Image (tube, rainbow, N blue to C red; front, side):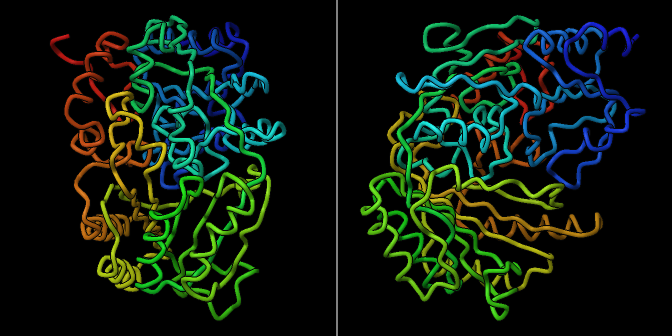
Length: 453
């Protein structure tokens, strides 16, 4: 029988249950539609606490949810009636500027990590949201502001401390547990709980970056993608085609009208950066232009307190976005009944594409563009309608069923398998059988252990 008081006495961290005043805030995750009530939430203090939680899960048979920043689109950081292992209190970081490495606990957010390393003019690329936990985004791959210049987050991962399903703390790197090291670079949380990650740091000090708002015409959208593909590798872009929100720096006449809300980072010489962004500014008269030289961490402003969007999404890879596709995006967004609908386009390539596809569990190295369609909704009964809209538009973008595991929602086994195509899935399933044969770590984009391993 689960004895919460006895367990609480055995750990250094904190146990939160339903009678705690913090329970409701502690169980909340980023996905606003997720409302699950765990039996308890454990805020681990160290790897030993993590091992104790895993032992308790094995003994009790309760479902385990592992949470860093809580940004899983599927709400995998929450469980109904199970145990939430919350890593948010594990935030230590050690930076070695001379060797250009950082050793960071996985409760850190991308913003906090970037601020700490940015003090030395160094960085590791994560995603585009500063409140994302570095553990979750790293294990899924990491596609962000530095992807074309310095690759995925996992391309800069040197080692990981992982607590496995049997409670053992292991160091996984190229020389120790190399199979596990291969699997966690893209295979998600299927193989254990990463408590510390060692990263290679890149020299990224002053960038030319920020947000650029352009009117969303078919020519501008197609032209933006073309310029992003032709740009030097120092430049990475994330373009959101979206109704302009009522931001104070946007003139009222633009509010609600479709714009390309682009986030741009040029990680290199400032003068070269200004030249590299000029073609984007020339696509149309900007609605707002906030691109400037800045320290890299400023790309991660503080998170909006309590922001928990209720939305459905569909992620995919595609090979091109020409004028006809851009027209489809505009037409579908204009017809959307969602309170807010977005089509996001990320041009890939560069350093990410030069890593062999079988070097890590992220197998989509050759893909040219990653797209995500998002539709928010206000009432639960609207979810099915908005999910169908997002899936239909995603189908029009010309991709196959493959998507980025880090952006998948609760979409079923076929979508998870498509995220790990061919031999990648078979290898992951075999490694899963070695490290987690009972599938204890199953509340994720799950890869069941190979039956014949």
